[in-house]
Length: 185
Picture 1 (spheres, helix red, strand yellow):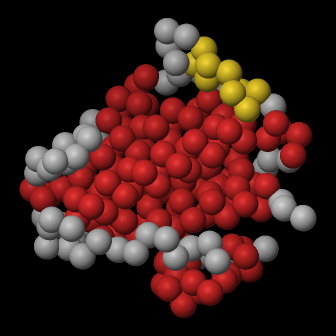
Picture 2 (cartoon, rainbow, N blue to C red):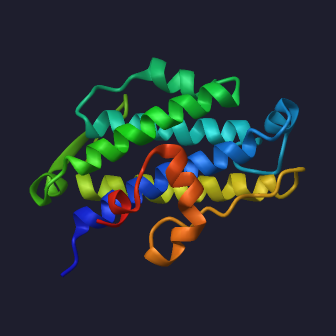
């Protein structure tokens, strides 16, 4: 039987692992390389990473029933450096992991009101979570592509879900203090 809660938990954990791996790779770049103009939607690696954080903060706030926090979104949009961004992203990622772990089949089906300032959007919690994970993957892929044009080799970002990828995630799991049983339960 398919367990949507298990799938979403693994996606939340894979999201954290991929962001941590991507941030470690980006940390090897000179600050000028992070902010250099690039042919991408947000124009630089730093701006794209900032956007990922901004959207996570936006949706996590909505999922947790909080009103729109423009100040927190502006801080994410304007985050000037990778160490600060990586710390903020880790906090958001872990909050998302905790949020997903707290869900039930019933709460996943509930409608969430998303304050967009000028309007309120209403969507199912499971649909919002699916969107957040897709959004993250999409923009991490853009950063991955931009890294290809730098001195840093882009990291593998998709070795986190299936059991056969165990060897490829050992270091990442250790850095986050996670075990295989946490991920594969």
